[in-house]
Image (cartoon, rainbow, N blue to C red; front, side, top):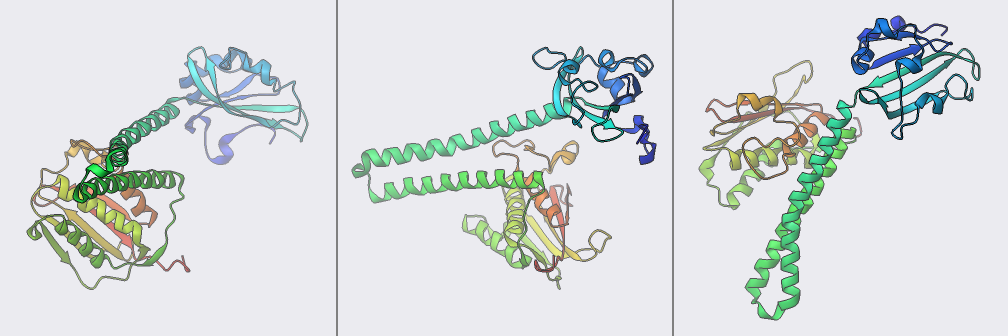
Length: 357
């Protein structure tokens, strides 16, 4: 390609979200798009026609001039460019990558294409990473302290305790170990969801039976039967999905409704209304009669670390729920129930057996 012209992509340089600076074979700027002007705080009219090293006086983090280090026009002709790295401009940090366009392999440089990105996205990622570390450290500290305390006490003073006392302490250790296991599982789920590597092991899933099992579990922990209303619209289409992960979704939604909602928790299951995205599927609705979720928080419910007004927990559960549902090709929404409480509704396509997927 002799001249650089993004029109062949149906785009103008100013349509691109990243900064784009292109210099010709003499090192003079011939393209300087709107994003580059915003990032560098320079007008395009002032940049065009000037030497690229003057328009972009880039330095590395050690204060060395980047153009002298890379020497795109005079360096080895086998190079194809420079990978993205963090560099400095007079106005601050910027992420920079470069592509060397040559007429022939090993030939002279015909175009130098430089891409600029602001560091806001990277900083947001770093803040999220730091927050995740802080949340995990906080959530691990309590059960680990308990496990350490009880095990040390039992090792040091085993003979002083009765069998009932030992059993109570060991049951506490076991429960805290379960908390740690759940947290590690959440972290693994987030990693797989973020990287698009969440694996699904599809098998026939009996949603009605799975929901009944979760309700029974809550009854065993002391909840009253009248706390739940369970409605199933038959017949349900056959569902092929990852049973363990769908169980995780159901458990999270029911746990939230019982713990943070009020009144009756209503679970409704039935065939999904056909849509282009899900022509045949199953819909599950979980609602309560509590105060509900404030309107201004609806858009943030499925984001990381959202906890609403409640304290405790990692705030990762609903983020994982959404990731699991979407990995199945389904959808999930949040709204207000007829009784005024929170209402979560997810729809799953019927799916196909794993050997056919």
